Amino acid sequence: MAALLRVSRCLVVKCNNHVNAVQVSIRSMASKTQVGFIGLGNMGNPMAKNLIKHGYPVIATDVFPESCKELQELGAQILDSPADVADKADRIITMLPSNPNVVDVYTGPNGILKKVKKGSLLIDSSTIDPAVSKEMAVAAEKLGAVFMGAPVSGGVGAATSGKLTFMVGGPEEEFNAAKELLSCMGANVVYCGQVGTGQAAKICNNMLLAIGMIGTAETMNLGIRLGLDPKLLAKILNMSSGRCWSSDTYNPVPGVMEGVPSANNYQGGFGTTLMTKDLGLAQNSATNTKTPVLLGSVAHQIYRMMCGRGYANKDFSSVFQFLREEEGQ
Image (cartoon, rainbow, N blue to C red; front, side, top):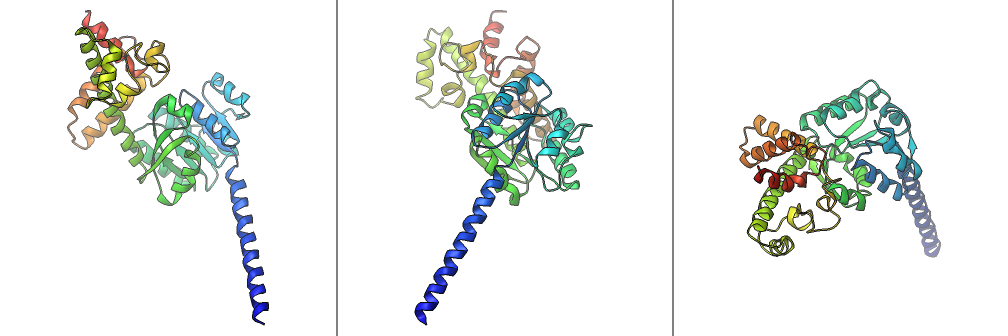
């Protein structure tokens, strides 16, 4: 009798294990259903490519049709509008330049919310005002969808290699669902809190990035004028207490590093216009919270000047070139 009971229990355990395995298999297959991607610029394009590399069928659109060609060749389905994407996919990622672009893509006449499905997960990786992120979350919730802000850090290089850092704000119970997709594009996916907190973290990061880049550019320029070889100076900085990301990973001086915008006439990378926009967001937040940001304010002024001097479409590390030109006037 005991032997019979053991055999029965063994069969039950095997049966349960089989059921669990089938359920996991079904979830795995379901997780590879199509993902919408809107915004195929310098960052969005490589991010969408990494989703395809991980086996996700991608449905995409961009305001510039030519931006879609490369992704289409990799098998992505290209549609005409964000609304069309929302009609086909219940998980959508957006990567857009600014507040107005996000508002239009989500709530415009051909926006996502015109055809969004109930239960859809909407992940916005744009860097925008935390207040706008919260507005989109409220609008999505009214239609039964979930909106999460997940801005990124790392630049085009990290977007291409799949090593971005995502700062996620939204309902905590939805974080794992978002992380499944974001982990295909990033090495770090950090939950920051409710909607808007991810944006807050990104704004703070980019303010520090701008300050650090200006400091690195000024330091390198001074060293060069004092007769130091720029490669030698960079080497010394990077083994000393002045080391930072702008000096050791993204050096702004042409000829010091390969594979960075300064080695390519400051083409590609993170545009001066976008950095100026992010610094403006930081300034607005500082004003609203009565927070003194003295260096952040100066950095904003410098990048605004650069936009008016022909640097708008160059990488933000071109501040080195800007300073060199300023000294000649």
